[in-house]
Length: 585
Image (cartoon, rainbow, N blue to C red; front, side, top):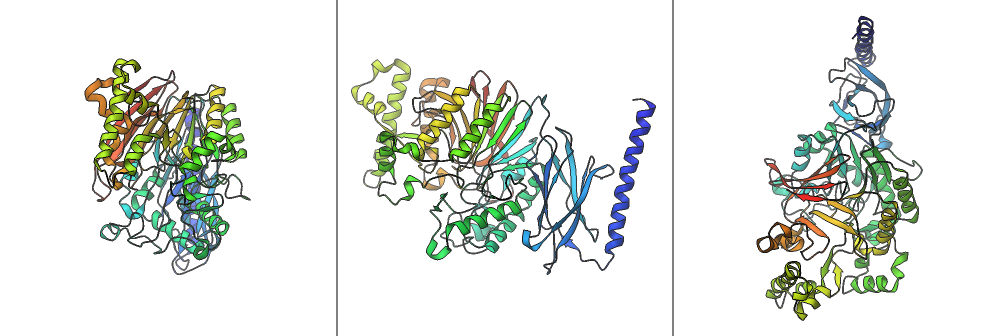
């Protein structure tokens, strides 16, 4: 470094430090001891980073007052704020639930920053750290992926574990909170009182004050606050930010007779989401539009979809049919009438097609709420479950017979199958969850065929199911287009809560390892053809490492959500190379 540059740097830093100190002194002088002090009760957060900007968020309110609060925000290169790089003023008001968001521009790509807020009485918020998206020459990026955080079910240990990891960005795929009230009969409330995790308000959130109070409850959680302050978040909503199994025109958990009209509730939910989340609003005139893209240098483009509110038609299984909508589903798919049913609108699909086409990144990631892979179960196994009340042994027999047929074909070829085994393997398969992309097969097919035609490397990040999955993304004809990493839930219970926790090895075929060795891993030898790995018991998050050459997913599980004391460990590591080779560890 030359003497001239050293002198210049010294002068810049000295000027910045002097300005920061002077500003704080002025604030204190202006406020004085009589200036009411604000409380930064819910910490700070950042989100929606781009290469040159990021959203900063906080909540500031004067106790027992509805007066607005003026804040000074600061972005610095150091945690002592000796070098303040950006600063400005913002106001919290009752109309915005006393939240404030700032879109800070003029930042350097791939750089980390410190930020804070200061009120006019000199009260300083928690200091947060944030990061812009990387420059085009980035070598790698690390993402922590989450979904389904049910406050009453247990402690947010997954957030705490991620805050202590080397993740750079947090991706939340929806169900950031749940709408259910504190009734012990409601989903996830069994241990709420014992854990001190009672839901507020006590009723399902419906009104503006209900939704705001529920966000405030969640944001009071220290682990959630810490992770928000630790790294920038990129979020999308799912159904529970509104109501269970939501779609454009309603929701399974919305009763117009007692909860008012759906558009009103939907718009309230969207308004409060934008108030409390560090999200850059794509269209201020339409808060229901939140699909958007993020370019992590030349490594990956992340396209955050809204598969829930923006364009989804009513689910087959919410019509009240005795068979759960299966007949409607089969009829629609086989007759072609399903082609008009949408998971995402034609407008969003066109945006996605254009965004992927114009991206030059090595990988195309979809931030997606619901499982996209085909989770089709053998009809024989589903029929056995349906008859389990009268023939409980039939389930184990049906699973064993099906897996044995698959193992026989894998080891000796189709010629070795008995006629009964051939019939089992060739029988129709049926999706188990028509709320997922499986309930909208034609819309999914159109998306996958487009990406296939564009010759892009596709990775889908998905949530909602509460279980950890890794699967192939295939067309209806069985052509592989990409892979899906689905994160386990933060706390919401999965298959284990309904007695299906032991199904994992049968679902992904790992039950056949004893018979076939490592060749059974990732070979599609389980009950679900496209499924290569699943954990149906544990809670946690997904740590993704992305380079030009490969994508690695580490399934991090916490030992418990029923105690604040826990351990975290990687349960499975799955890597996918640019050439498509998959390895498991």
